[in-house]
Amino acid sequence: MKPEAPDSPILGQDETRYNNPGFLDAFSYYKGEAPLQAGVDAIADYVTGKGYETDPETRVILDHISGDGKETFDEISHNMIIGMLLNKGGSFCQIIREGDKPTGLLLNMKVLNPERVVVIFGADGRIKRYEIENAKAAGGFQKLERWQVFHLRNNKVFDEMGATT
Image 1: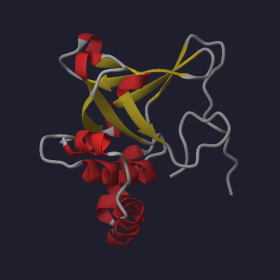
Image 2 (image 1 turned 60 degrees about the horizontal axis):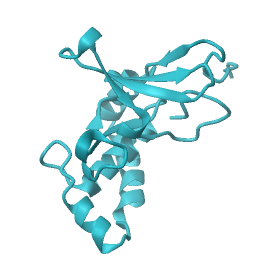
Image 3 (image 1 turned 90 degrees about the vertical axis):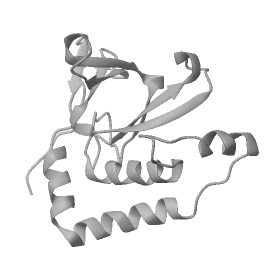
């Protein structure tokens, strides 16, 4: 076995960028190996298959979540679990709120391609923001605040920036 150190942020450095290394390899295996895909899908089915319980007001909000326009909240949740299991950096979903404020009404959630997401850690080791590759944005990246991204990580250990696939 080869020794491996945690991929920790550099404390004291203004920013440390984490861009989800290994995602393309993991995604290729998932798409190319039917037994692996079946196993990952079975875990996601188990986690999301029982549904969720919530109050009536929240149920109405979640029933109107449409992701890319054709998804349901259940499908988005299923997709997020698969992404979390495949990608060392986790899975990401853009949160869209009324008035573009942290306290605004939840309007939608769009699953993001982890290959296009960069997690920016601050000097204190905490997530500072997210940057999404976007050709139309200044500098080629759209900056999102922490409250604008739902981020799942699998088996994060210590102060790792990523997690375990």
